[in-house]
Image (cartoon, rainbow, N blue to C red; front, side, top):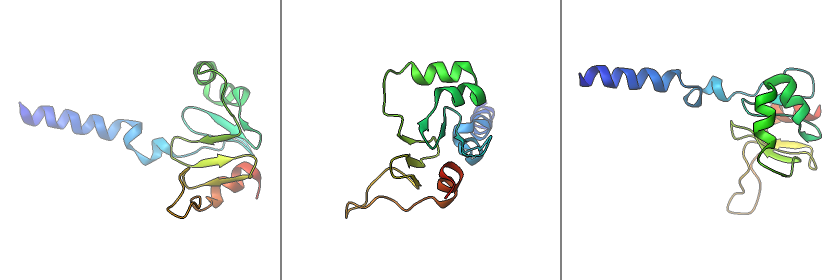
Amino acid sequence: MKTIAWTILAVTLVATPAFSAAGKALQSPQAGVLCDPYMCADANGVSKELTEKFLGKVAATRLFAQGTFDTSEFTFANGVFCDTKERACRQDRYFDANGQRSPVDDEATARLFGK
């Protein structure tokens, strides 16, 4: 019986997108747009219109129901952080011990800002 329970748990964890790299990959449904499973953004920032267009009305409503927020700086589900004022995406949103941001994510920056 324990073997069956462990097998079901293992299959559930492997099949759940939160535990798979593919579930966290950014998608670029059109030039200049990046989406994760929860939001879409362009060079101007997080976009309700693009989120609705590519992820559906429910996703857009859920995202913007959180209230007013700064749409110019955002972190995708895979951890990539983008800043539209800097016009760059970085590997994550954290600073190192010297106060420096993480390295630029060249692929995400090119897709979002055309650099």
